[in-house]
Length: 119
Image (cartoon, rainbow, N blue to C red; front, side):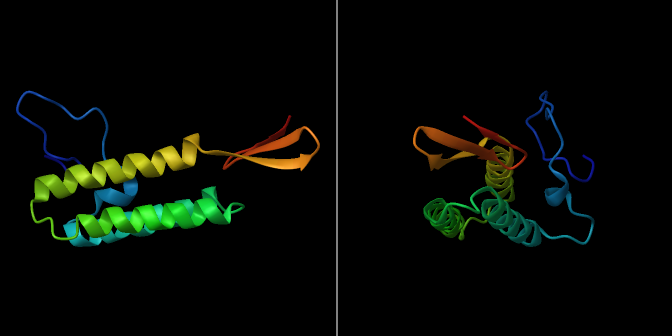
């Protein structure tokens, strides 16, 4: 198995490699990778929800709760599965979240991390 690849069941292949922030090198421990994912999720949360204090707080609480609830996990396989879920959530935050901001009567400004549009 190469660096950056998660183990799979015999006869099955991973459809895509781990994201760059989870690959790590020979000196990166699993614990360091988990911490890196935690920080990446919080940075992405701050970017995606920057104009929405309620969403910022809700996402902060959810991220912290999920990591805290799995804090005592010791199985490397389970930890890697949880990290995969976390990295998928980070991608969803970046690519699928949009915000609508009322700019006037019957006017809504749609914002995403990449562009804005007015309706």
